[in-house]
Length: 532
View 1 (cartoon, rainbow, N blue to C red):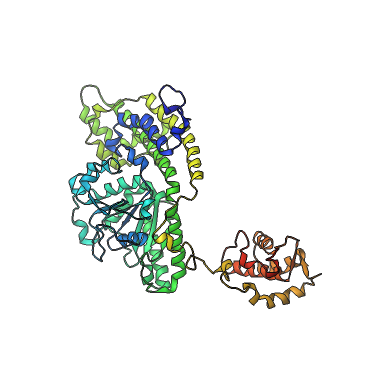
View 2: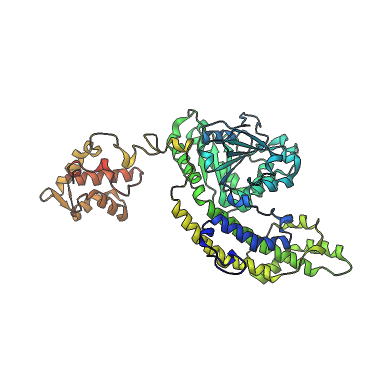
């Protein structure tokens, strides 16, 4: 299937390649890793990927200031306590906790975790003991964790607490996780919207991962509707100053814990928002392969640019004398080198690494060990992006088609799936689903009065006559056309009194802000048509 499957160019047994993770792993090791290794990519940007990075389950990273409800959010999703869990108004979670599935419940300390080849955390070893002593894996049997893993993080500090050193680079650790997770959830408390310096630094560290970011405005049940509007506006204004993107980040409003709502005014809003967030999270297993593919493409583009930068610096270095002075000069003029590479190779400015960070790392490097341009390595990566990735995309779609129902199950995800507490149950087109009597019958006398003013012939009105009445709703023709198709149950091109009443009921449903069903639900079928 793929030319890169083995070195002699012969076709590999296709059965061995019917897996996106396997294809990504081979692509990385044979085409991208040689380029990264040659130009010291791992010293500047991100450690090399390992097998576990391609095989691990989707991960969700929770980030937020202390007491915004991160740990409670995890507890709410799983409907179960996890080992090492501590909840309180003060900064209680002082560790990174990877909550993962395991047959036995227990904690694995960080130093043991980073030597386990089956876990995707081996490269965290570079952050040292100060971090590893604050990193644990909580394993437990839970249906939610069979599909996803969740990373709980220490509460981001504010005020005087920010001045206390953690002993490791907190923002760098979060950036490492951000590269590998499928979803980043930023939690805010409706009562604490101030974004501290440390939180600002963290959000900027996540700059290249806006596509993974979602924002949750938690504890929104503790304030009234008017206050909630003001809080939401203030949050969007604060985020706009830090996240420099023209698009607005999706914000989910609610109260994510299993306790009664303190101010129940916005219950329907909270239910709808929770369902939207759950739907987004439930799709992660199905989209995991596509996310890994996308991350590999981003990594390859950065590795290409990095190779151009390093080779350009090497080219400018003298062979004998004045190396140190030249090094300082090149670092100071790195912006000009960026501009030259951008123009020469038609590279987007957004593909370049952050200038100040690159200058800082270059200051500690030995330029004499840098490599000159090696076209074959770059050609291999170009071929990967142009050809191999397209073949893998086909395989991604095949995997998705083979597993259409793959989603997160269990815990809070099951609570509103079925039954009367499902979101929207008994509302809109679903109204009357549990009633023995046809729901339209209560308004039918009103609709009958209108029906008989349209001069029905043989108990039916024509499409032209029905249209005159239906357009009074001011709904677009596309919507009215759909209502006509749903109401004309016997498909004869006319409406009898029951069908006309049904059409008006569906107009009412739409005018009240509900969506129309794709097919007419059984409880809305007129009684005289149910035997047909």
